[in-house]
Length: 234
Image (cartoon, rainbow, N blue to C red):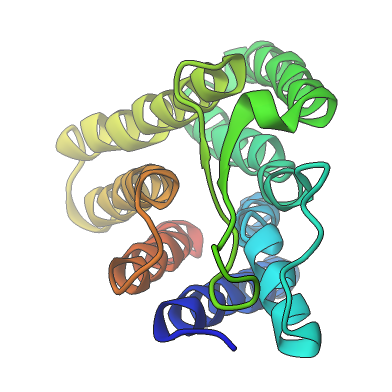
């Protein structure tokens, strides 16, 4: 039977997955209704970012059904979560490149596309070289915890992805905001905050152990999508 920490971990992960999917389709729907095409990119980024908690979510569902954790013999918990990181980063970077560096957009996306494929291959070939897994001492009482090994190739790539997102979107939009006034300044600041929240809380997710803290971390992660939505919607 799950402990309180296990319930918090599972419910907050489920919240992120469900609302990430709902927000993603909502943003895509709003794009069709308002003809703001860039909201499609935000919708996809939100969808992929929500699915980044799929491993935790499926472990939670497995425990609820069978009272034991998902079979993680092949590192499936980490793979099912981090497989969505490159698509989330690439679609987010697309937003920044399109608005800030449209002429270099495809060069930037090509670089991230190649690195993203490399990241996917690495975690599939050897997930235990990419992630630290912490199985509960008593199966079914907690969910399987996992963190990226920072000095692994996968960890270095993840750090590069998040740092690039902060620089391109967070810092880039903030600098543009300081050069702007009125409504445009406000929207650029919202985009900057959205990127910063996404990266900071995404990093904290990988560094913090399950507990009460994950409630705030995962809510902050979800808040990033709304900051970016209100920055782009008009």
